[in-house]
Length: 229
Ligand code: 6PG
Image (cartoon, helix red, strand yellow):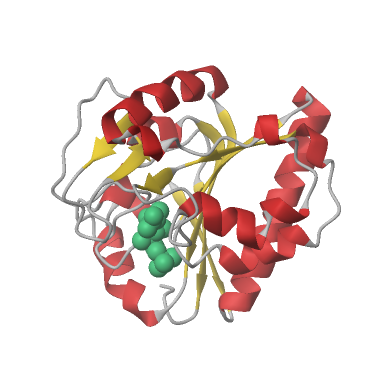
């Protein structure tokens, strides 16, 4: 049996809305704890569509937003205001509606080009580690952030430039597996039947990218019944 069953805590919820609700609750709870203990909550956000509902819940939540600091697990090399950019999605569904100081929201500067943006963001990430929480999604092939099957990256990098990504757009920037794992908590959101084969492959020990992420505590996985174990 793969390490997925040993270093991971699975929570199968009714549907995507229940997953979103639970995710928002866990993020807000983690923030309260981090701010009480360290005065700040540093979170790296997931992209894709699955976290959108949770972000919409956070947009309506009451929290100590002044002490949140926002990073991104990955970004797509697209024009600044492109709706397909993960930072634009997060702003449109959540960040534009809460008073997190703009100096504490750190989009990945993809407009610099993948290599330079990766270098720049690595400097920022190095200062921030360990995160308090890393939020992840997962693709049908078991990829997470922009860490795709069959793509290797230099081990000493905290942030990678990605080319020829199998999921459009081809050029992306992603935090490394090490940086995504340098966190107090990891929360993975997976919904929909199309993701079930990847979850099964992961649990059977197949080397899918999501399996490379290991944090300080067991990964918490929120799935709906369609995707779940
Ligand atoms: C991205 C994401 C990617 C995403 C998965 C799942 O930029 O595309 O970071 O890793 O989390 O592909 O995407 P969905 O949530 O849209 O299914």
